[in-house]
Image 1 (spheres, rainbow, N blue to C red):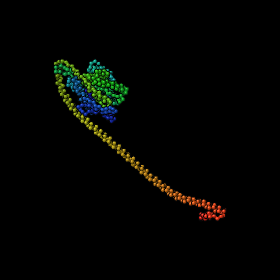
Image 2: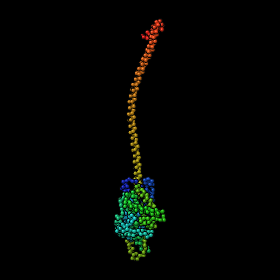
Image 3: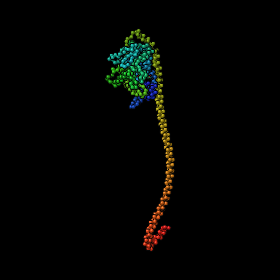
Image 4: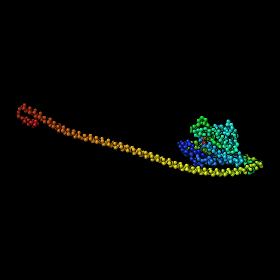
Amino acid sequence: MANRLCRPPSAEELRSGAAQVVQRGSNEAQPSVTLAAGHGNKRASTFQFDAVWGPDAPQEAVYADAVADLVCQAVQGYSCTVMCYGQTGSGKTHTMLGLIQQALADIYGRAAAANGSVACSYLELYNEEMSDLLANDSAVKVAMLDDGKNGPAVLKGLSVHSVTCCDEALALLERGTDRRQTASTLLNSSSSRSHAVFIVTIQTSELNPAGQVVQRHGKLHMVDLAGSESAGRSGAEGQQASEAGNINRSLSTLGRVITALTSQQAHIPYRDSKLTRLLRDSLGGTAQTCIIATAAPTVQCWEETASTLRYAQQARGISNRPQVHATTQAASSQEVQQMQQKMEQLSAVTLELELQRVRAEAAHAAAQRAEQRALEYEEQLGQERQQAARWQQEAERWRHEHDELVKQLDQQQQQQAASALEDSVHLQQVAIIEAEVEGLKGQLRRQDATIKRLQGENRAFERQHELEGQVEHLQRQLQAAQENDQPNPKRARAVQLLGNTRR
Ligand SMILES: Nc1ncnc2c1ncn2[C@@H]1O[C@H](COP(=O)(O)OP(=O)(O)OP(=O)(O)O)[C@@H](O)[C@H]1O
Ligand SMILES: [Mg+2]
């Protein structure tokens, strides 16, 4: 029931260089999407789907995988729904318009082959009010009648336009899309501010083996939801902020309906929003439904993408009970004859269409192979880019180490030069000190000589002093002897000594 499509990065996203976090799984047998880890504690996770298309997948591939079978069922009388779901700017409208164009071309081929007639309606749900995008009077509002029964919503006031060829239907699609509420936001220059449903009604008639006319009333609902958005990131203010509030409220009710349906709750809150009342038959009702979840590829949208993928994966668990809407009547012989003629005429057309289908399938298979090859190349390129980044890091490290070494070498050279200078200053100082020491030694020698001379002089002086003492003593003795005038040996000796001393 759920599929996922990732659009290519926008020019803005490429310029920002933001990491791309949405990766398609490589196992074709079990389509999956891996959301790489985001900032903080946002962990990587993998989600399983029925089909997954990468950013380069052509619209034809999406149509062939997801919508072609439902168109077939609608022509068979079933009510079918294709719904695009995802955050703002993720590519819902782009995808849906491409699918509607292909579905119309396909329906015309098939309905013509089944003797059918086709009609279109285009409904908009804006700020919880429904209006008719194809009405001549845009003031007329559409009302949803609650007949208390399960089944398709009954819409009062919605115009139904019979169309006889694909171009007429495309013109209606264009007219209605032009009238749809859009605005420019920071996340999408042409953001849908409303949910829109393009409804194709297909009525076919055929004869059954019992000769009765079987009339089938199939419907194809192509639902382009408005995208969830955070006001902070979309820059919504004033009227845009209140639109965003209504959009987010109805989408969160849709999320609760999906959760209630898949967790087998007794109460499904369809009535909590007009959107879920409108989609009641598509979610858990009698319609056959395909949900296409669209995702933006970059890490800035991580939270919205994780939420989209979670709901889309959960929606796979919803089981519907598809019913054919057909009436059977007895046919008159004239009717039988007319129908047989018409069926013969149409068998040639059917054959041609079958041929076209086979060719389209072959082209689709070739496109898938090319996409697979592109994925492989992309993976290889990614590995080579990683290797190149590692080498670059290694080169950076080497360059850094080289710069460090050069710096250290410079410092060592400077230190050596400084210490050489210091050495030469030191040597000069040593020479000066040595000269000073030599000078001091000379002074010392001279002082020694002076001291010796002075000591000699001192000794002579002391001797002289001593002798003078003796002289004085002898003179006193002599004087005493003269006074007594007596011969005195001591005096004679003193006179002799005194004579020696005077000599
Ligand atoms: N698969 C794709 N390939 C190339 N361009 C794409 C693809 N999907 C979307 N884009 C471009 O991305 C932009 C946003 O796409 P779109 O308007 O479809 O987003 P949206 O989901 O409808 O957003 P909103 O919820 O705001 O209406 C558009 O310019 C569209 O052309
Ligand atoms: Mg849109």
